Image (cartoon, rainbow, N blue to C red; front, side, top):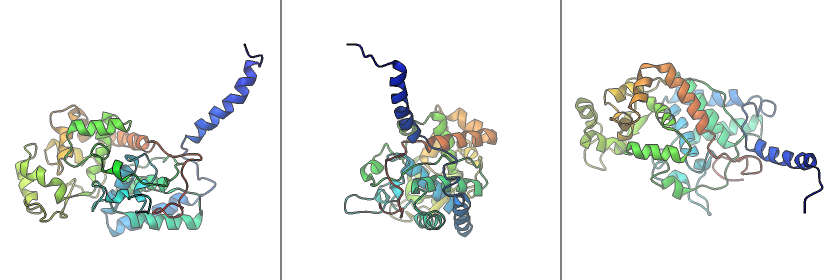
Length: 323
């Protein structure tokens, strides 16, 4: 039997429901303008102090945002410590003895809670901190989309899976697959890997590349062998810059190192090794404006990966544990 209810009445009732669901899923750059007007200067002050104390910290904080979004979306799950009900992502292979900056996030959260308690999520703090780290080190600034909620649990198994967070020895096909699984394009891959213009790598992650790979400049390989002994277990935590030319400045020199086959990581050099990403690497190496523009667009896009919004998740009082 046909309904006698006028169509416009049905739409009047249904559309607000769907629009509500749609709007709950959206992130908004001005979300905290009234509820926490001191948010941005509060976070930036702590990040500036941390980077002034240790320039490497900027790369570490940026990396936390990346590793968060690639496991169940941008929900601050990687900040959670072990609990009786789950194992922390901090112990997963991509993070163990590598992910750092958690104490700085604690300081930021404490400072934010003083100016607007219970308002700003840890996931949003990670996104803002990543932006500030890049900008403080000479890179671009962008309007951060906000409104993420924090997860109540971590996912150690997913964080530890080989196709979730790209490994230091990953092939180009593995890199492309990982990024595609997260809704990110080839351009996003190359642009976001440009973040390796800052930071360092551990010997355990580049040992194979400098001793066994052929797609590396021989003199560059030899110069790094002194800091990374060939035998496993010796000097595993010794460090080398990802971009030896300007390791604490966010610029496009990382791509120039790829052209010279002087990437410290196998996965980095895979971006310029006769494959489908070579042209983008050449573009970014010669056109810093193209790199900055694409990096900004890609990191904003990455921040949109499966956020918890609306009634999902919570705003943690302490980033290390659920409320």
